[in-house]
Image (cartoon, rainbow, N blue to C red; front, side):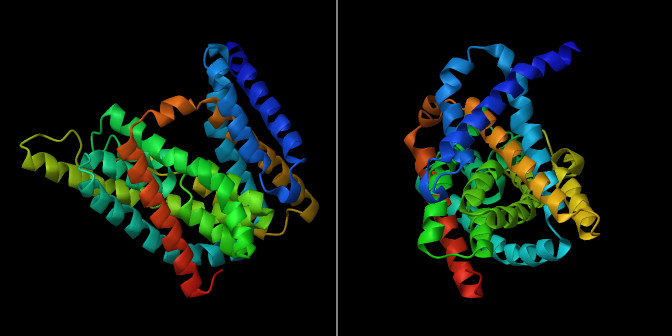
Length: 339
């Protein structure tokens, strides 16, 4: 019972932030800025106050991690396998080019800026795969310092804030379809929460497509961690150091995003036809509200001053790589006719 009480204050706070954000968003014409964006920004504004009130911490952490994943899993009940397979197929094509851009460009500009290869690699992983989650998965594999982790997360997060606001505006300017925008946001925006915020601002359909693309992209975290485990062992061998981890010691179960399997189970349930259209619509509404809560919680955990104090080189590196990924994703979609 005591443990449950520890979560209540933070959960209630995120609900209030989400409700406020939804109310504010109703006054914005053409849905240019969604409730998710307002929740994120409102949370960041409240962070200096909330971080001093530790009784909120457990609930905020729970919402930012568990509720977001639960919302994505529930979204599976609004999609069919035909949608998942069609969008997932296109995303693999685009994702191949964006991953090559993120890691290839990251290596080149990392060398150009004379950056630590571990920091450069973490920024590339955050940009190419899934933001903070990829950084957290790769960091122990390459034995990165805490400062490298903080800088990498800061570099990718600042760009994400800009993309959440600018992507929907750009998508409407270019006259993109729901599928095209979902594919673009899902392959070019970094963190899962930011993908959700940007895509659902454009439209519900684009949001659903973007979630499928993002989950497909997240699966690449497994081979990438394995590759970096090998690279780190090789670098340590050059320096005559013994690596703490080898490729054989990496446990797949510790890095595999299992909520994706739950998402696919929900899609399978929806594909059987047992979920009515009305129920599916209600579930979608609940899922979207949970996503707004999660974005608010992420904002409440984010100190913007600390993010901007990380130094110019990591931020510039992250901005350049993220911009390249955005451009490459856009150009590949034009080429394959998914726009």
